[in-house]
Length: 319
Length: 154
Image (cartoon, rainbow over all chains, first blue to last red; front, side, top):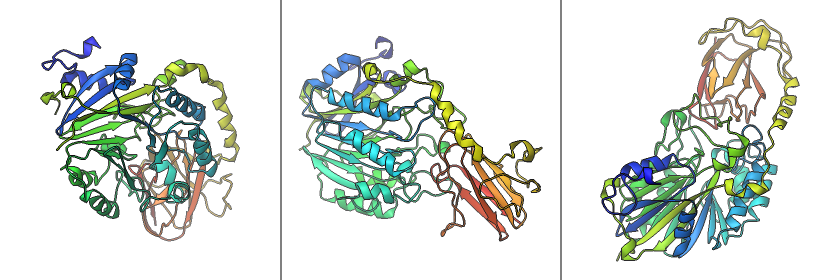
């Protein structure tokens, strides 16, 4: 940890360089503190991080992403096995998560038996409820028919949805339908119209958590790692003091903060993908030694904590 | 009015739970068994293929769906790229796409209704389409829409 912190004017354990380094460090924990709409963060790591995070949480939820059930090649010939490990980790948490968000690519080829296998494994997770949003692998063979047969209950359009929990408003968006040649992920006008209505009655101070498969900021356009009309969605959320965006798709942890919005992508439970532009293509990173595989897979745990003033640390250099 | 709060992310690697996981590696060769269906034209049809011009379609094929009426021309999907990117063929030519990547792709025409759509092509799977009408056919991968290609039929 020490090498990550070189300047720490606020004595909160973070500087700009520290955060940037952390982005490439899978397995890290990052604490985000939001107070009055101003966001700061600090690094956490390993067991100390878990302890700190579990310390005073009002509630916890977990994000699981990119299970790709049906994939069976290097570096992971047992993606069901690694998803089960993720479930075991969830079940071993000191406090049971209020719910689980799966941010898409449940399956590899949208086959019924793949969907069934995912459902069976996730049934074992001791969480209050599970919410899904599809990835392109879940919808590309039939425009999402099989996906919606299973997860279409109570959702709008092609699968978008929202719900409230403990004062936080959660919005599940779908940006993998009707993809266009040469393009990025797309939300579409219908969904944007719905989003506008969905948030219209909310006060500015309502914390917002958005979850969707493809990143809602352009990570790497050449590989399609972005959403073409994300800006319109984010414009609708601009007035809110705190917006947290959780994505998957790129099989690695990246974080970015922009104004009051924190973007975060999760690890896959199946296989890692290369850092943006660091390979010829975004195909799976194959040469992962078997004993290292599980260190590049993972899940994300999010704790929600009512802040005491002492914890509302502000670091204005993080912008 | 605003409620101060903080959100803590913990990215939990799976390593710590290594006890319950397996680490088998050798089994992946089994996937190669899906290959006998493959058209055996890698050796015969490749030749000095030009990247953006037509192959001469005069080679027979063993592709499972072909009727041998016309000679197929191949487009290889490799490293998230359609190769050749632009293929020019004569009317009546059968074009075969083969996926050499470790992830699924599609060859999906950009028009609606689709002029052609391969559906999911997993590793080493092929799709063929006979182009009976002259024109320019743009297509893309519905899983990775940044992948695009074009078939020109003259």
